[in-house]
Image (tube, rainbow, N blue to C red; front, side, top):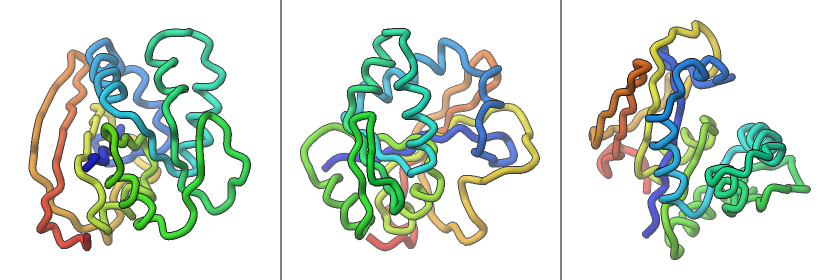
Length: 184
């Protein structure tokens, strides 16, 4: 069975929205991790807002580097009730999202990667469909914005790996625990 892995940039105070504040902390170490994660997957799963931002940015990127080539070529599934004309090698999921994602997990292939998409990640956690969280915690307090977890979020995790970078970023990889209370 494929794993669903969520990759999230967070501030020290748990903010994930409008992540322009991450730029000063990105370095070669994070680039290598992102490369490894992207090339270890064969599908992207995104929420609508993340899809709109990423597709606009990546389709306009003409660098021609291997990361750009890979992210543009991967098939993408977008959870949306409003978008009907998707580009960027994407198809929509809009019915029983938990059921459709469960079917993707049970299919053949490599890991399914989620970038951002906080609402989607929270929903999939509630249904026990996230296998791993990779939290890229930047040493900055943003103060306000959307958080990854809401006050209602409940899940248990097991620490799998910790990495630190020269810019002070801590990358925490957590695996979800089957007994976390989320329904399967």
